[in-house]
Image (cartoon, rainbow, N blue to C red):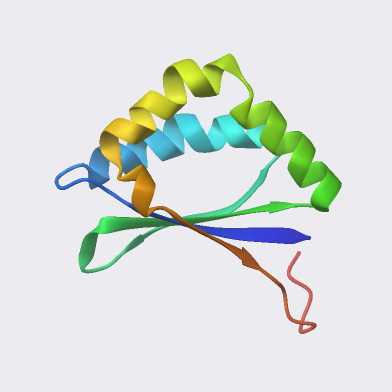
Length: 106
């Protein structure tokens, strides 16, 4: 599995709306295109931070799913503008994660 830790800086006063947008629109859209949404989180005491994790079976699947997501009209015309209105896109941090050989996670 390939995992990504995705951290976003949310514009002041927009966290509640951003969480609703992610839960109701963006995350279901990503899952519908084949991404596995592992979890979605806010950070206690930091109302400007939102974190989520997504996963893919392998690099080939990640490339296919990302093309389906980011190459779509739905992303370009509706989801991206809404995400940009609520978050600081230039501050986003995307970190690849490598699982340790510990206990099974699925």
